[in-house]
Image (tube, rainbow, N blue to C red; front, side, top):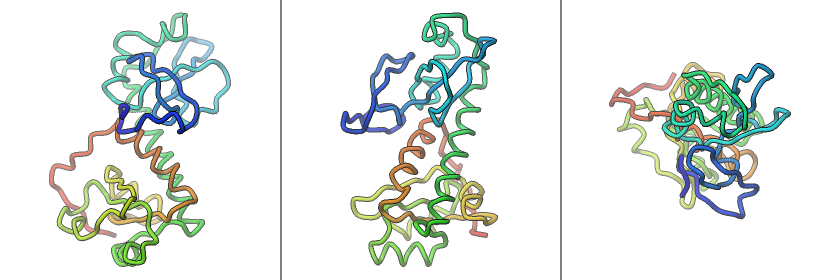
Length: 207
Protein backbone atom coordinates (compact mmCIF):
# COMPACT_ATOMS: atom_id res chain seq x y z
CA UNK A 1 0.00 0.00 0.00
CA UNK A 2 1.33 3.44 -0.90
CA UNK A 3 1.01 6.60 1.12
CA UNK A 4 -2.44 8.12 1.60
CA UNK A 5 -4.05 4.66 1.76
CA UNK A 6 -3.71 4.05 -1.98
CA UNK A 7 -2.79 0.57 -3.05
CA UNK A 8 0.15 0.20 -5.40
CA UNK A 9 -0.97 -1.81 -8.38
CA UNK A 10 0.65 -1.65 -11.80
CA UNK A 11 -2.69 -2.39 -13.41
CA UNK A 12 -4.03 0.93 -12.12
CA UNK A 13 -2.67 3.03 -14.97
CA UNK A 14 0.40 5.26 -15.44
CA UNK A 15 2.86 5.57 -12.59
CA UNK A 16 4.98 8.49 -11.47
CA UNK A 17 7.75 9.01 -8.93
CA UNK A 18 7.29 11.14 -5.83
CA UNK A 19 10.07 13.75 -5.56
CA UNK A 20 10.02 13.53 -1.74
CA UNK A 21 9.94 9.78 -1.08
CA UNK A 22 11.33 8.35 -4.30
CA UNK A 23 8.42 5.91 -4.42
CA UNK A 24 6.81 5.05 -7.75
CA UNK A 25 3.04 4.59 -7.65
CA UNK A 26 -0.11 5.14 -9.75
CA UNK A 27 -0.73 8.78 -10.66
CA UNK A 28 -4.03 8.90 -8.79
CA UNK A 29 -2.13 8.49 -5.50
CA UNK A 30 -0.02 11.55 -6.23
CA UNK A 31 -0.52 15.29 -6.63
CA UNK A 32 0.90 16.93 -9.77
CA UNK A 33 2.56 20.34 -9.52
CA UNK A 34 3.53 22.79 -12.21
CA UNK A 35 5.67 25.91 -12.10
CA UNK A 36 4.66 29.36 -13.32
CA UNK A 37 6.91 31.77 -15.27
CA UNK A 38 7.92 33.44 -12.00
CA UNK A 39 9.06 30.15 -10.47
CA UNK A 40 5.99 29.80 -8.23
CA UNK A 41 4.77 26.22 -7.69
CA UNK A 42 1.07 25.51 -8.21
CA UNK A 43 -0.95 22.33 -7.53
CA UNK A 44 -2.57 20.73 -10.58
CA UNK A 45 -4.96 18.30 -8.88
CA UNK A 46 -6.72 17.45 -12.15
CA UNK A 47 -3.36 16.86 -13.88
CA UNK A 48 -4.45 18.88 -16.91
CA UNK A 49 -2.32 22.03 -16.87
CA UNK A 50 0.29 22.38 -19.63
CA UNK A 51 4.00 22.26 -19.03
CA UNK A 52 6.36 19.99 -17.15
CA UNK A 53 5.04 18.60 -13.90
CA UNK A 54 6.49 16.94 -10.83
CA UNK A 55 4.64 14.67 -8.42
CA UNK A 56 4.35 14.40 -4.64
CA UNK A 57 2.49 11.68 -2.73
CA UNK A 58 -0.98 12.68 -1.51
CA UNK A 59 0.22 12.81 2.09
CA UNK A 60 0.39 15.98 4.20
CA UNK A 61 3.67 15.07 5.93
CA UNK A 62 5.34 14.24 2.62
CA UNK A 63 4.09 17.45 1.04
CA UNK A 64 5.32 19.50 3.99
CA UNK A 65 8.71 17.79 3.56
CA UNK A 66 8.80 18.72 -0.12
CA UNK A 67 8.14 22.36 0.78
CA UNK A 68 10.44 22.51 3.80
CA UNK A 69 13.42 20.90 2.08
CA UNK A 70 12.88 22.83 -1.17
CA UNK A 71 12.54 19.61 -3.15
CA UNK A 72 10.52 21.31 -5.87
CA UNK A 73 13.67 23.10 -7.04
CA UNK A 74 15.36 19.73 -7.37
CA UNK A 75 12.36 18.26 -9.16
CA UNK A 76 12.08 21.10 -11.67
CA UNK A 77 15.87 21.40 -11.93
CA UNK A 78 15.62 25.15 -11.43
CA UNK A 79 14.81 27.62 -8.66
CA UNK A 80 11.20 27.04 -7.57
CA UNK A 81 9.19 28.71 -4.81
CA UNK A 82 6.42 26.92 -2.91
CA UNK A 83 4.15 28.68 -0.41
CA UNK A 84 4.46 27.40 3.15
CA UNK A 85 0.74 26.56 3.37
CA UNK A 86 0.79 24.58 0.11
CA UNK A 87 -0.61 21.47 1.82
CA UNK A 88 -3.67 23.44 2.98
CA UNK A 89 -4.31 24.70 -0.55
CA UNK A 90 -3.96 21.21 -2.01
CA UNK A 91 -6.38 19.82 0.59
CA UNK A 92 -8.96 22.48 -0.31
CA UNK A 93 -8.67 21.76 -4.02
CA UNK A 94 -8.88 17.98 -3.63
CA UNK A 95 -11.88 18.32 -1.27
CA UNK A 96 -13.60 20.54 -3.83
CA UNK A 97 -12.92 17.94 -6.50
CA UNK A 98 -14.43 15.13 -4.40
CA UNK A 99 -17.54 17.24 -3.69
CA UNK A 100 -17.96 18.03 -7.40
CA UNK A 101 -17.67 14.36 -8.38
CA UNK A 102 -20.25 13.28 -5.77
CA UNK A 103 -22.53 16.05 -7.04
CA UNK A 104 -22.18 14.74 -10.60
CA UNK A 105 -23.00 11.23 -9.38
CA UNK A 106 -26.12 12.60 -7.64
CA UNK A 107 -27.27 14.34 -10.82
CA UNK A 108 -26.88 11.11 -12.81
CA UNK A 109 -28.86 9.12 -10.24
CA UNK A 110 -25.83 7.23 -8.92
CA UNK A 111 -25.80 8.78 -5.43
CA UNK A 112 -28.33 9.19 -2.64
CA UNK A 113 -28.30 10.93 0.73
CA UNK A 114 -30.23 10.47 3.96
CA UNK A 115 -30.31 7.56 6.38
CA UNK A 116 -33.43 5.84 5.02
CA UNK A 117 -32.43 6.07 1.36
CA UNK A 118 -28.91 4.87 2.09
CA UNK A 119 -30.21 2.00 4.22
CA UNK A 120 -32.54 0.96 1.38
CA UNK A 121 -29.69 0.93 -1.12
CA UNK A 122 -27.55 -1.09 1.28
CA UNK A 123 -30.35 -3.59 1.94
CA UNK A 124 -30.90 -4.02 -1.80
CA UNK A 125 -27.14 -4.28 -2.40
CA UNK A 126 -27.34 -1.35 -4.79
CA UNK A 127 -24.66 0.63 -2.95
CA UNK A 128 -20.96 0.22 -3.72
CA UNK A 129 -19.64 3.04 -1.53
CA UNK A 130 -20.88 4.20 1.88
CA UNK A 131 -20.05 7.81 2.72
CA UNK A 132 -20.54 9.22 6.23
CA UNK A 133 -19.67 12.65 7.60
CA UNK A 134 -16.60 12.76 9.82
CA UNK A 135 -18.46 15.01 12.27
CA UNK A 136 -21.64 12.91 12.34
CA UNK A 137 -22.84 11.04 15.41
CA UNK A 138 -20.81 7.89 15.94
CA UNK A 139 -23.86 6.09 17.27
CA UNK A 140 -25.91 6.99 14.22
CA UNK A 141 -23.16 6.05 11.79
CA UNK A 142 -22.65 2.66 13.43
CA UNK A 143 -26.14 1.59 12.35
CA UNK A 144 -25.01 1.34 8.71
CA UNK A 145 -22.35 -1.04 7.43
CA UNK A 146 -19.97 -0.77 4.49
CA UNK A 147 -21.21 -2.81 1.49
CA UNK A 148 -19.71 -6.27 1.08
CA UNK A 149 -16.63 -5.85 -1.13
CA UNK A 150 -17.47 -2.14 -1.17
CA UNK A 151 -15.67 1.02 -0.01
CA UNK A 152 -16.07 3.44 2.88
CA UNK A 153 -15.39 7.19 2.91
CA UNK A 154 -15.57 8.85 6.32
CA UNK A 155 -13.44 11.99 6.19
CA UNK A 156 -15.70 14.53 4.50
CA UNK A 157 -17.58 16.90 6.80
CA UNK A 158 -21.37 17.17 7.00
CA UNK A 159 -21.15 20.59 5.37
CA UNK A 160 -19.05 19.26 2.49
CA UNK A 161 -21.43 16.36 1.88
CA UNK A 162 -24.31 18.81 2.11
CA UNK A 163 -22.73 20.92 -0.64
CA UNK A 164 -22.55 17.84 -2.87
CA UNK A 165 -26.29 17.18 -2.43
CA UNK A 166 -27.55 20.76 -2.38
CA UNK A 167 -28.41 20.64 1.31
CA UNK A 168 -27.16 22.36 4.44
CA UNK A 169 -25.72 19.16 5.90
CA UNK A 170 -25.64 15.46 5.04
CA UNK A 171 -24.46 12.68 7.36
CA UNK A 172 -25.13 9.53 5.31
CA UNK A 173 -24.70 9.02 1.57
CA UNK A 174 -24.08 6.15 -0.83
CA UNK A 175 -22.81 5.64 -4.37
CA UNK A 176 -23.95 2.96 -6.77
CA UNK A 177 -21.40 0.73 -8.48
CA UNK A 178 -20.06 1.91 -11.81
CA UNK A 179 -20.47 5.48 -12.94
CA UNK A 180 -18.25 7.86 -10.99
CA UNK A 181 -17.76 5.61 -7.96
CA UNK A 182 -14.17 4.64 -8.81
CA UNK A 183 -13.13 8.25 -9.39
CA UNK A 184 -14.80 9.40 -6.18
CA UNK A 185 -12.98 6.71 -4.18
CA UNK A 186 -9.61 7.58 -5.76
CA UNK A 187 -9.99 11.30 -5.09
CA UNK A 188 -11.27 10.64 -1.56
CA UNK A 189 -8.21 8.51 -0.84
CA UNK A 190 -6.00 11.42 -1.87
CA UNK A 191 -7.98 13.69 0.45
CA UNK A 192 -7.60 11.24 3.32
CA UNK A 193 -3.83 11.50 3.15
CA UNK A 194 -4.01 15.29 3.29
CA UNK A 195 -6.52 15.63 6.11
CA UNK A 196 -6.86 15.00 9.83
CA UNK A 197 -10.06 12.99 10.28
CA UNK A 198 -10.58 12.99 14.06
CA UNK A 199 -13.78 14.94 14.76
CA UNK A 200 -13.08 15.08 18.49
CA UNK A 201 -16.22 13.12 19.27
CA UNK A 202 -18.57 15.94 18.28
CA UNK A 203 -21.57 14.64 16.38
CA UNK A 204 -23.86 16.46 13.98
CA UNK A 205 -27.48 15.91 13.08
CA UNK A 206 -28.57 15.82 9.48
CA UNK A 207 -30.12 18.96 8.02
